[in-house]
Length: 135
Image 1 (spheres, helix red, strand yellow):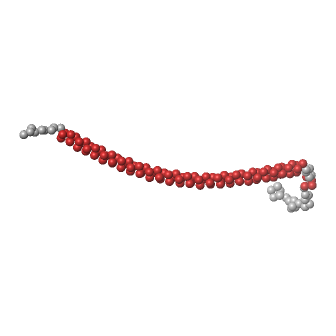
Image 2: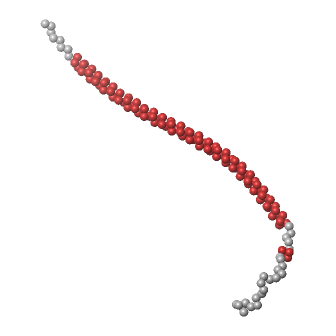
Image 3: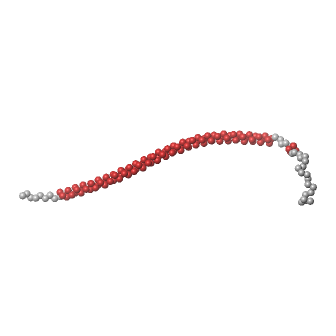
């Protein structure tokens, strides 16, 4: 009979291999969960980016509309400015004309006061003979 051969250490290798396989399997499961979490976060970030892009587009449209309104207001302001300038020029001409008329009227010789007074031919009421207070 041949002697029995006892191999020691193979079971240790098998246990080590099984342990390493279990650790690897656990690590793979953890990596899978982390990957799923990151994918979910990436999806949320993409949705937020999409909402931000839509808000930016709306803001751009509003800015364009406000810009158009501002351009129209500026055009109206220029028109109003020219109208005010014309009105001021007309007012200045009118004031100058009035000043010249005033100067001309001062240069004329005034009429004597005697001619301006009207003589009363009859008094408004007859003079009182006596006054109740003065006697």
